[in-house]
Each structure stands twice: as structure tokens, then as C-alpha cells.
Amino acid sequence: MFEEFSQEVPLRAIYWKDLRPGLAFAGGLTVNGGVPPELAGHPVLDSALIHALHDRYRLNPDKKVLLLGGEGGLSAAEWSEALRKAEARLAPLGRLRHRVRGLKQRQPQPELPVWESSWVQRGTLIWPLAGGGPSLLAQLSRDIGLAEVLNREAFTRFNLPVDRPAALHLVVDTSYSMEASCKDEVSRTAIELFRATLAAVLPLAEIRVYAFSEECRVVEGALAASGVRRAGTDFSSFARAALRHRRPDRPNALLLFTDGLPERRAEALRGMELLREAGFFYTQIIFNLAEDRRSYALDSSEEKALDGYFKGDEPESALELTPEEYRAQEAGFREGFIELARAAGGNQLIITVDKALSLAAIEVFDRWYGDLAG
Image (cartoon, rainbow, N blue to C red; front, side, top):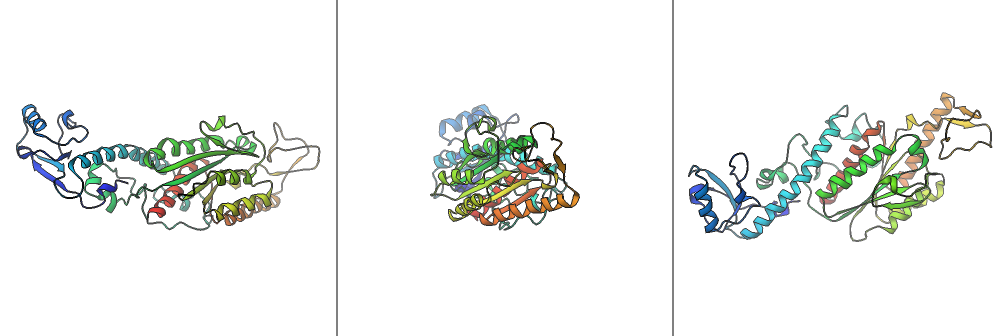
């Protein structure tokens, strides 16, 4: 990101009275609270423009203006283009950082990564990412503007990652249990954070969204319009779909949002193994197991549950589990998920607060993308 500015930049502070042609306007001049319209877009100064500026604006002759160019490397025209591109990237980057800052401020310990906070059950990140590398989200309390790019703090202080191609596969469980447990809305919010905000920050990162239940489909529009019938949970369906859409020319990451174990364990494990063999970075983010309402047993084979939930009221044949049975069920869920994460060679987060999903997902992606660039 901003690679043109990653090395020493030929930035010059030149007095207003000494403006000369052949340099690109970089900043340092505002009139009535804004950049003069003649200098919008960081033009390369020529004699006519300099004359027009002096004729219109009676500024202090010793006012310093920041200009770029005049030395080896990029031409003034290329610096002008680089400045415009940098400003175009800074706007969505600022929106992303502002959005994540707001998400972190709502968690109990905003100074911690989400997987170290009380919003995530500790010990469920099986293989921690490296950390300490390039990041889009470092020092969120500070803004990153063109000044930080020009003085290179974007690299030395904020350690922004370099651009590189990547493929992100966002997989959303849309089975019946996700609707019954009211998890759909937080999933949609997380998807929009990636689609509407991150995509503009990282133009080389291809983002593809999948919805799955017993089948899996790529979703171009709204999740609600995916066309996937809400039924059981089949992990092998999204594994097959992600493998079909894997980009062999770039690193691939898969983030899964789910609330339930697959119904066909052997097929799911094989799907996870295939993802690992194909080189996917894999992280599954699981909604709070402690709040799972599937805490009953059936004493009649005549009663059927869909994806672990009944449609409507629970039948009389549904028996509540005892506390011991419930703890055993939760432990079984946990072990089942860990087995899947290990088969995929990936990570697992169990969030204790549903609204932590967006923050958990963007932080995992940011750490992965930073490791690629580090």
C-alpha cells in the first residue's frame, strides 16, 4: 500500500515566492479552510498556473508549500498521479479504521485483540498467527492521512502492509439453526464490513461470499437472496465450492461463520483435509456454545427436529437435558469443532458475544494479510 512512498520521497518545502514549474503540488497550502481549486488533484506546476496563483492569492511570500519531484526516480507527473492514488486509498482506509475503532470501543477490553478479550473463549485459537507484522488496524486511535504517507509514518509507525493479490472466501452458515438462533443479522453485518469497506482498501484482494446449509452457493447480492434452502449443516458442501473457486495464483483464506457441527462428520473431515492440502488458510468462528438452545433429547422417533431445532413449539416428547448432560453435550460440540479445525490445519474462535463476529473476522483477516506481506 502506497508503495511509491515507501522509500525516500523527494519532498521539498518551497517558499510561495519561489514557486517554479516542473514540480507536483503535495500540500501545505489551504485557503479559507480548503485547498485552492487550482491545486486540487495535485497538479504539476507550470508557468501559467504559478502566475494565476500569484495573481489570485496574496499570501505571505515566505509561506512554505510542499512540492514533489525534481530528482531521480518518478517524474513530477508520476508523483502527481501517485498523490491522487494515495488520497483515493486513504478515504476507504479511514472508513475501515473508524468502523473497527467503533467495534473495539464496544468490547470490554478495547486495547486487546478480540481473541484475547472476554468476547472470545480463551484457548480456542489453535495455531496463533505470527502477529507484530504489517497491519491495517495498528494504532486505531490515530488517523492516517496524506501527511503520514509523505513523512513515511504510514510505514515506520503504522506498518501498513504492501499490496499483494489474495483470495478471501467468506463462508456463512445459513442453515435452519442460524435463523432459529437469530444469528443471521450479525453475519450480514460482518459480510458487509468486508464487501463495502475492506474491498475498497485492498483492490488486489478478491472477496467471494458463500452461503451454505446442505448445499452451498456463491452469493453475489444479499445473503437472504442466496437461494439456499434452510436445512441441515453440511461442511463438505462449502469445502467443495471453495476448492472449485480457489485461485492457484495467489494465497487463499477461508473464514467460516457457523453455529453447528456438520451432520456428516466423515465427509466434513475429508473436506477440511482437502482445504489444508490445497493450501487454504482456514479459520472457523463459532457462535457461543454456552447459549446453544439445542439442549434436549427426544423420547419418540415420531418427532423430528430440523438442524437441531423444532419449527414452532417444542413437542411434549422433548426432554430437557440435565446439567450434566448439557455440559457433556457442550464438551462434545467443542471437541467436534476442534477436530475439524485441526483437520483443516487452521484456527478456531468461539465468540461469547454474537456482535463480536465482525471484529473477530476482520482481525483474523488483517493478521493473515499482514503475515503475507511481512
